[in-house]
Length: 573
Figure 1 (tube, rainbow, N blue to C red):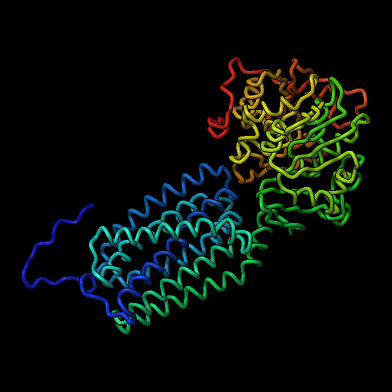
Figure 2: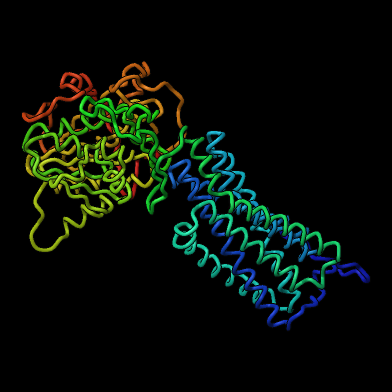
């Protein structure tokens, strides 16, 4: 929208602040530098708000590509709207900028706490995400026109030069804010306190610019109104910082339904353990429930998604491991993921296993599997076994380095177990790609087998069959199968929303399975020759008999879709 030229009418009244020079307490050169410094700080804070919304949406909702697209598109659109609305404030640019910064500090600083509250107590945060993206975008968009008016009142300059100075400070501030968010704010302050602290910095920068540098342009009434507004916002932000800890604990209780025994934000993800404080009772029998007095079975949540429940995890891990251990030697085993040690526990029950290598990206998960009384008892202290070696690293990068290692080529593995998050989560798509399976196949021995957790075959059928098509694209024969036992509230997909439903009443959980087959885990067994379902000679007794595995074989669709690659991921469609 372009304003029409103003008619030159003698004696016409003009906006009092738009053209008159500002009365500053410092020389104009220093005043201009201070305005640019305020631009720098506001830009840094604005980008932190933006990144904070993207990061929090990825944690709470999942699928970071979609969430980043939603936040950025709505925010950029809103910035345009804010720029247009700011035209009405140019006649009182100093007061307008002061009000905008105070509101932006409150909305942006409190956005993380508000979105987490929506997720914890209302069960979803998508509407709040869009609302905050629009609100913060409108306020950020209003900053530049008002700052342009203020900097021109300090010292008149041609429009091109003023725009260049303003945007240079804005872009440099965005660089600092973008680097400060992942390397300073998140690790040192966390999501909630980091956003509130950013709001406080934003508030102080705006207040200093308006209440000190342009104080002579303010009426007494406007000055005291801005002082009161800034004091109120600062008090709210400081109160939020003081109450961030209790708030987070209350929100966790609302999310997980119990007091979390362990709650850590690692460098990779949020890790939460609930229940099972006394360790599993009757481990040998496969019960998995907490000892008398613990109150709840042990449950492991990663980024808010239920990954392990001691009620039924044995069915999953035995179904994942058992078929791969049959059909050939299994002395050397590689586990990709599986830092909880539960797949390793099942592998160590086979007498002929000589070595197990676990590649886990989050060392804190492995540490909990070693030291937490409940989890270490559930995995039977698997990481204390001398045959087990844990490696910290991204599974894709680790496989790639093995292929590039100079000198002697590493010995191949008889069995590879892929116990990774579902491919619908954006960060995991590369771990289900054609390139990843090609690297995995290169590490397989001549008669080796690869077992892959491929997600629920009914609830996310497209994802399941895409995993199979991708395995076939690297020259491996495949065999899809499923086993019952997946809880209705087992959230393995990209959305953290928990579906209500009854809990299984036994280890297999069959009593709670829906009639449409959605309560199944899906797997794909792959090898260079067409694999078959069998039982290894040294197989221990399990909860999943061979008859159940064979009954769970899945008929393939008449036509498979294309494989998923790094450059064209199919799992997010």
